[in-house]
Length: 314
Image 1 (tube, helix red, strand yellow):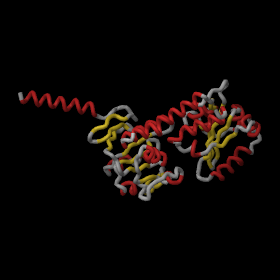
Image 2 (cartoon, one colour; image 1 turned 45 degrees about the horizontal axis):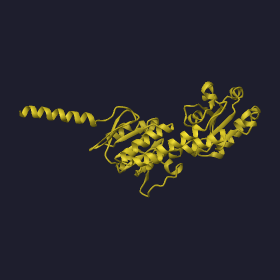
Image 3 (cartoon, rainbow, N blue to C red; image 1 turned 30 degrees about the horizontal axis):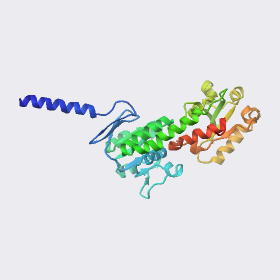
């Protein structure tokens, strides 16, 4: 009789473990367990966190997401201060730049969770080092709004602040859906999206953050079909495509230098002034905070900004 009772007890224990185990689908939260919250990150690793109080974010946008989820930060990279201007406590320490984080400073903070980007090679290089130091890491990939929404959901479930997912996620999604419902054109406008830097300019297609926004708003991106524009700036190809709109995002810390190079390297070309977009004053510089940096809970404002340019204010 005792033997049967022990067998039943073991079976019950195994079933409970199966029901409360980690989920296997990437990016989806799995279960809230007494010993911690478990989910699968962007690198496919199963992560378990236990009410983290000392969190380090190695990207300014990730730091902002964690704050929007009701968390606090022990360490951040410089872009959290320089680009984001986040409201951080005096105890929050800089651990270097997002593309060259200082691993010694990270470890010295004794964090119980580090948030990293799965598409940043310098972050991937820290995986084993931090693991050996006994530090829990979670990798995320955020390019589009849905990626942000997924990360925010995971973070709010870690912090136990699901109401902030509704406020900073679901409400923003509803705002975007409303904008898209009114963004209709008889003929989809053609667009050229350029990223400019000190060395010149290059086109972006619809697989980028701003490219996706334009695509969602019904635009036809000329770089989707003419992919040679993704490799180098080609005036002949641009003249041939002759887009209805040209959108420009300045990259780099020196906007003045970027715009000077744009004028000297591109705008001085006689063919440039003959483009339809330029002649119709549809050659538009986009603000970096909305279209270069991840807008997070202000993603709806980025959609609204482009929508008003294309279709006017509603």
